[in-house]
Length: 342
Figure 1 (cartoon, one colour):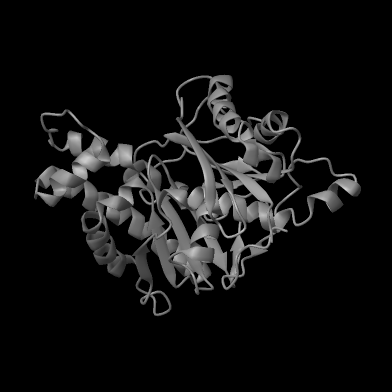
Figure 2 (cartoon, one colour):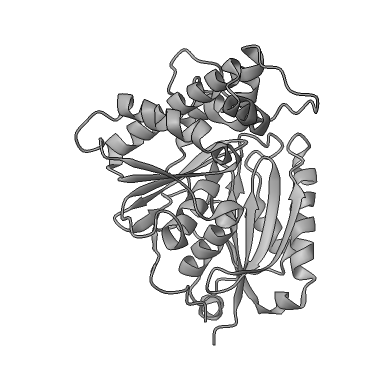
């Protein structure tokens, strides 16, 4: 019986989630804090430490053998640092070292949150059985991860598939990343809400100005809300088509808070994709909602750790006392079996 656990962190612009994950991808304990995204770096790290404190304070922590982090990006897995676009207090922040300090020097692996979601959806979700896939999160930001040739492909620094910062409007708005017209600048939840307000949408009595409120208005036929979602769908379609043309994926899985809009997003997205994915080898591209829900980032971060730290005891015996490796190779996920962590 495999009793070891992996601690997982899912760090985004809105929330910081943590969990203890077993070998079957089951979450045994979870914790969460809002991301103090506009505060200084140490304040953000304080929220991470609070999440980890709930995990380390549990009797289950004695079974934890490693920590996996899926963070909003860009990340630099080779140096253990993160610079999330939507968390300005973290620029080249030494997240891996800080997490090691909190967790008693356990081995730590870092990947982008989109890569984590790709790992989870490929293992247990909507990309299961597909050898070439793009898995995306559309939320406060827009991220993604790739499955190529049956293997999750994080790239040398853990950022491969970061579709949110493909430019789809050469003269578009300036993005916080420094470029213009990025997919994220058009299709993220805050930007959908911003555009709807600019077009004349007005929130209801509650004053809710989130993308969820815009989606509700769009379902009721409100023209500015509908137009904002259609523009977001067009930007996503352009980015997806470009990615599919480059690497020949056959399925796109989309999760995150904005994906909860359902047909308000997916109907115009599939329609726009027909205008952009025109070459014969991408015309049959499937777009589908994610299945793993809010647990995808946690399960995927745990999966990355399992496959890159197969034997912690052996690694330490060889002189490795923890921390991220220099680059993360693509790791296979056996979809027919639970993760073997023993």
